[in-house]
Each structure stands twice: as structure tokens, then as C-alpha cells.
Amino acid sequence: MNSGWACSANHQCACHVCSHHHARFVRRPYKHSSSRLRVTAPFSAVVAISLSIELPQGGIMILENKVSIISGIGPGLGQELAYAFAREGSDVVLVARTESKLQEVADEISRQWPDRRTLVCPTDISDAAQTQRMVDATIAEFGRIDCLVNSAYVPPPFTMFEDANFDDWRKSFDVTVFGTLQLTQQVVPHMKSNG
Image (cartoon, rainbow, N blue to C red):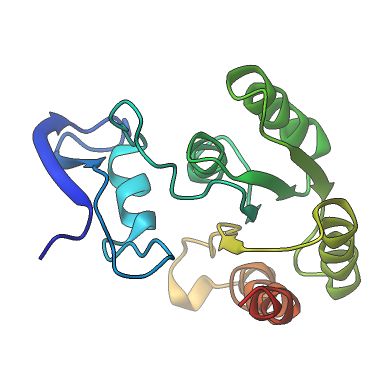
């Protein structure tokens, strides 16, 4: 099966968390019967494993002319996802609570990929009014939404169960579960309208 992704060589993991060897995937152009490019390999897995996608010269950027919202822009995975999406041709809406962090990522995207557009949206995704304002601002700026990456995460308390503070658990669920569901619900109609 030709999925358009090819495993090149094993490489040392670049995530600085583990020392495993992972397969590195590179994009290779291929003909497809449909006018739409379909990628059967999970894009998020490729990003999470290697944090770099190498394209052959003249290769196709799989997110060219797309608009992607990425929540949870921080110093880790959310930031790397934003860079990966910009590298693959997408304009990027950056979502997190801290505006200064969002601006740093936006500035780096502008430096590395000057033809990409970014929108900085300081947002607490547990607040439905704030997420709706962010979605509205995205439509006002770009006219469409093609992709949503829910990367916002508040870890639960790491304590013994008998010592658990359920207010802390509620904060975690408000962002990680309900905030994610709420934001997805607000974005889906716009994505469906794009076909």
C-alpha cells in the first residue's frame, strides 16, 4: 500500500524525554485518484515521534493554504505542533492563556516561514465565551477553519487517592476534557462548511 509516507532510517529520539529509536518518516509525492490529498499515516503520530518532517525537493506541503487552530501552545508539544503545521504550509491560530508565550511562537514562525500568517489568541479554553471569541476572530481573520489540534492539557494532581483534592481534579477536567469538547463543538460547523 502506497500511503505517501516512507520510513527512511532509524534516528535517536529528539524529544529529550526518552532514548528510544523511532522511525523517521519523510513525505514522498505520489499520484492519487482523487483531487484531494489523503494521508493514511496519522500526521499527529509523525509529529509527536520525530518533530520534523523532511520533504524532498519539490515535495508537496500537505497543509498548504489551510488554517489550523492549535490549543495549548507552551514550551513543549503545542509549540512543536505549531512549527510543524507552519512548516507544512498552514496558517496557524495560536491558543493558550499566556499572550507573551503565544507571541514568541508567532515571532518564530514569522522568522522561519515569512509567508505563513499567525493569529495570537490568548484564551482559557475552559471558558466557552473566550473560545467562541477566538473562533469568531479566526473566521474574521482567515474566513475558514480547516484543522483543530487540541493540545491544551492541565495534569491532574499526582497524589495518593485518599489525599486527592477534587477541586484540582475539576480544574484538570475543565480544560483537558470539557474545554476540549467545547472547543471542538464550536469549530466543527466551520470545518464541515469547508467540505
